[in-house]
Structures are given as C-alpha cells and as structure tokens.
Length: 385
Ligand SMILES: *Cc1c(COP(=O)(O)O)cnc(C)c1O
Image (spheres, rainbow, N blue to C red):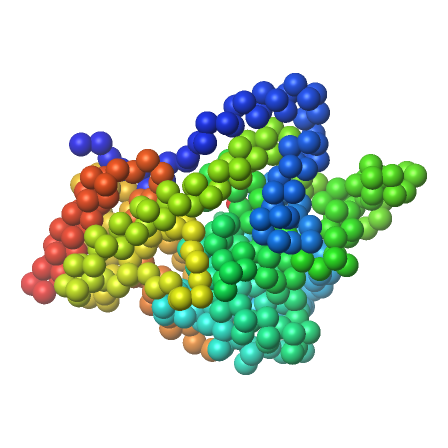
C-alpha cells in the first residue's frame, strides 16, 4: 500500500492560468494587478483597514515589529509553544520574548497568565492561534487596552477561522498570515500583514517598500519618492500573487473540504479516546476553526516515539510539533520565561499530528486511525511489560 504523506499541497486548477495572465500583463515586480486583487480580497474577507502581501508570515511579523517601533530591551509576551518566527521577529530588533504557559485544552497562550508577566518594558502581546483555533481574544484585547500594549496576532495558521464571528488576523492591532505550502491557502512561500489601525497604514507601506514612500508616489500623493525611514523589501512578485489569488478565491471551498476530513478524524478517534490512549482537540464554542491541523494528545503512559515509528512502519507519516522555544539554544539566550511552563513542557511531548490534505479518501483516514490504534496498543503493551 502507498504511504500516506503528512501534507500534500492542494491546487485549485486556476493557478497556471492566472500566472500566464500575470506574464501577459508584463509587470512581474510586486504591487501589480494581482497583488491589488489579493489585497482587496483580504481587506474585505478579513475586514481589515489594510492588507499587504509579504513574502512570508515571518516577513509580516518582522514588519509588525518595525511598525510598532520595537526597541532593544522591550519585552513581548508570547507562548513558547510556537514557531521560531514568532520570537525571531522581535529578537531581530533587540527585544526579549517573554514566554507564558499555554492552556491545556487549546494549546493556545493562557490568557489568565498574561497580566502577571507584564512589566514596564512590555510593549506587545503576540497570541498564536494554534491549529486555527482562536486564542481567548476578548480577554487578551482587554488586558492590552488596560496596559496600552499592542496586540499582534500570529494568525499564520488562522486563515478563514474566526472568534465570535470575527476573522482571525483582523482582531488585534496587527495580524500576520502565512501562505506557506504547508498551510491551508498557499502560494509556496507567502504571507500578509493585516493592519487594523488606520494610523499604521502609510508607515506599513513605507517599511515594506525599502523605507520609501513609493506607494504614495504611485497614488499621486507625493511628486517624487524618497527614503523616509528604516525598511526593507518585504513584497512578493506578481507571479506569487497570481498563484495566491487562484487560492484565495477558493478559500471557502478549501476550508469546507478540510473540515470534512477533520470531522471524520474526530469521529474515528473517539474509540481511542474512550480506550484511554489519547485526548482529542478541543474547539471552544466561540471559535470556528479552519481544520488546519488534526492532532491527538497521547496519554502520558503512551510512548510517542514508539507510536510515530510504528505508524511510519505502516506507511503513515504522522508528526510531532514544536520544541518549545524556551528549551531551544537561541531561546535560552534571547528570551525569558514567566512562571512555570508545565503545559508547554508536557503537551509538546504528547502531541501527534495526523496527515490532513484535500484529496484524502475515507479509506486513507481509516488506515491512519488503524495504524494509530495498533501503534498505541503496542506502545501501551510494551510500557506495561
Ligand atoms: C507557519 C508559521 C509561521 C511562519 O510562516 P512563514 O510564512 O513560513 O514565514 C509563523 N508562525 C506560525 C505559528 C506558523 O505556523
């Protein structure tokens, strides 16, 4: 039987047509027709003041750090259980990531632990919507307002997901999306910065265009463009934007198809949960997720390494996820922790992510769960002997 990969990028079928069209328009650099279409799509679907395509979510987070003028010694509160870019973007500006623990139910930052981590150096909170399930944004926004902090959503995994009806990426002051090949809506590498505060809009354009007011020049708002502030080149070319538009236009269908697969996994894993091998993901009632990921949390007696290798032997490519940043070499050097990170340390050792991609058949999913069950039984049996 064929192995089942962890991920398989989905194509809508319009990508090549749009790229051909971009080529015919004879403008391959950034901010052409396709980029503008993507911006409009994002602004209307996420409901933000301004959206700007970037070449990655990493770039969008770096732009956010520049935009709120992070200075050396500033502190930024975030989970340790996240991708390196969440922290790197701020460390590049000399700031100190301050890690607080995650919630055991959603693996998102524990909003009840944020306030105690605030000092007079704190500038921002960066909630990461893990697996496309929203953080407790009402509490986070409330804490931020009371302490005059910025909220930058790392919504890399959150495209098309929402919290109390509000699209993720559009709730905080700034948000960042990823269109990396491993995400739901893709352009190979790609991302977007979402700007909710009108006063940031012009400066965001300047930072993205090498520190110049080139965008204003092209709108006829200034008669020449000049170096205005520190900046870099954060924009993708038109070919990437053309590919991305073909995906954004199908974002609803992509999300629905992924959700069907997710729902089936949820059903298929119920007996394993009842047998005491694992726990399934929790989605709070106010969150609409986007099926970015389906994971299980193995009970602490079940040896994950054994489960993953046994699944692999059966042709199923399942994965663990982040090594918490505080426990990594750079994390030890550049960041500090606030409080204990018990959930972060424990749950990062228990998680197993299952293959999820559009085109998986029901029998593929049954194979994945059969392999998971026999791997759990084996690991359990060995731990008892
Ligand atoms: C994927 C991801 C990123 C990075 O996205 P890129 O587009 O690859 O730069 C950042 N944060 C989180 C939480 C992610 O999942």
